[in-house]
Image (cartoon, rainbow, N blue to C red; front, side, top):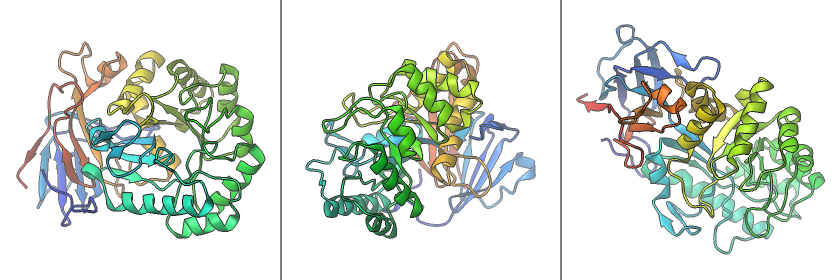
Length: 400
């Protein structure tokens, strides 16, 4: 297993060849399955996808024999609440990000570092904390997982220059609108517009309060604010009434985020409504962890399985919710198996003794897949998962 340096990147440019892929899932909801058995990546970027006979596999520094398993883009968790490194004070747990790596997650996006003890709420303090979080997670990647952090929670008194300053410092995302003192649509809309002007993406809390200081955010405020992501539309934890969820699916043009730590029935309602409206491309997935219900290392694949089995949609489509859909809505360079994209993958097979005949069939029957390997930026970051049920077949790292 190759090592990452302190920045999480491969120490030297390398060529990775993954051959003998049994099924290649692209992450693209319009074309979720590719007719290919080989992927080639150079210096952490995908160079070629196709049949082995048609690709240049020479001079590989690392070769992976997929052993007929399924290759998909690394999963993206669109909604996490990191604090300091790989530790969360909410659960006093160390290693939660590395544990999620073993659930196939290769990329995480912060919805605000709100569980930081003594979180500053004055403007100078919140900007300082956001910049610090952005810098620290840019330089520290547990197991290689990329964490896009530094998500300030907006507070009354912030002006356009504050957002300009944050953007200039490298901050790219806002924490959940509604977790701070700004709880009215007019003020939130103005601040979200300032953020968007300077290239900062926004997420809004949706539903009932989740932590002390938060409050109900209903459909009217969500629609008025017009944040880029309708955060945990199925509640985090308490969901809005059905008619409000349906209205958001119908009237908002933004990303609709379903989370693990929410209301499962509301999640299915959201997905079914989006399907009826032919807007499945707007669905993205997160866990909303760490939270009061703990850390869910398998949260993303659990939501995929739940939506596929109970929502009766193909597993390859559900996987797109946590890969290509999220990458497109979040402006990320991962999430799709295509030349030029980041070479981050999860290799999976059906769990041992699953009733499903194949991985896709097993997921559609409600089982979790067995993860055999995770690759980030062309580097093997984890072998057989310590958290998923054991895969029937596992890939193998060969000589270069």
